[in-house]
Length: 258
Image (cartoon, rainbow, N blue to C red; front, side, top):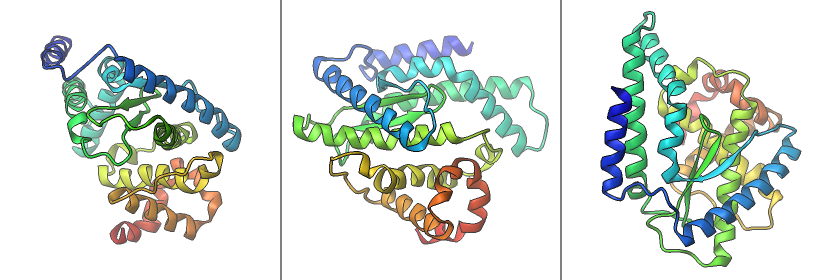
């Protein structure tokens, strides 16, 4: 049933040209450039951190739906566990089926609507790292193509930020139960704060490109992490992926400030 629903939704969205499985010439050029930069900075970051980030691939966002279909069972299981914890009971088959359904619909909706939600981009490209697939997904629409000179700067920023997320995953020994129960806002402060801080202050010397400072809410995430590091010391940075629930109890006041 879930597979049938998934196929119907995906087919309907493709009919509306929301999903494109074949990259155009410009998309392929940018994808190739991004892949080269991500491969380069992955090696540099692994050398800097002493941590393997695994087999990180660069993909178009239009590939996300099929990729996540293969990883959906893992996320559906997390949804199942999250629901049962919230209701203080043992997970059951209904939880799993509902989790699969929610995951399927959410993934298709995300893929269809993200280009519109990202219409107001600052840097010309939008990307995100997905831990379930260990891929970095690049979305280029509907932003006008920037010049080739600025493209390298923008894609360098994408590479460093998304590889920071990959570093988070690589450092995480096990997924804390708080990852299933903490609010989305709390997790966003820690995960995005980690990535923006790392890009701007820990990996910035790995490139000769002038990085673009985050703006708006993204700047708040960076400032939040700056103050955590200021209180705890720089050595805490690689431990944050495992210690963030504990650290959040100590520094919850900072989330009220930023």
